[in-house]
Length: 189
Image (tube, rainbow, N blue to C red):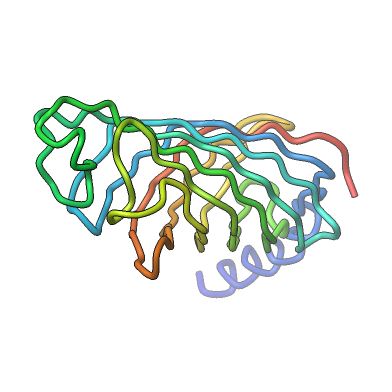
């Protein structure tokens, strides 16, 4: 029995390179973004995120991402959440982000592609609100990672987790985000 297990293991180990996926030249992804403002312990309903990436080689790529999350704040009273003019009113809060940066991924398996990325850009909050009493737009950096699971040639499901930090007026606003979506890939390196 042990010999059979070793033989099966060696055959599968030898077949692994045959299963290796080609690295796509270009990927488009879109999906739902579930965000939690950890600085204020407040959640946002599902928003959206879209990204485009190009791979430089089999492990390094460049990615751009835009996204939006929205929520209502009824009778807003929180200090940094609503300006003095709008405090006590109902507000529709909108957060839009736009970022770019490097992505490192492993295309060693044809079915699962894990990746890590570090994006930098900006986030803009609107709807009568401000970030911690100052600017409505702040420098944003977002380390994160995830996995793409192939479901058909050129199509995968993406599960991703990120930790976003928005820096304005010397303060950090922190958000965690989970993304679930679809990836379409084209070309091959």
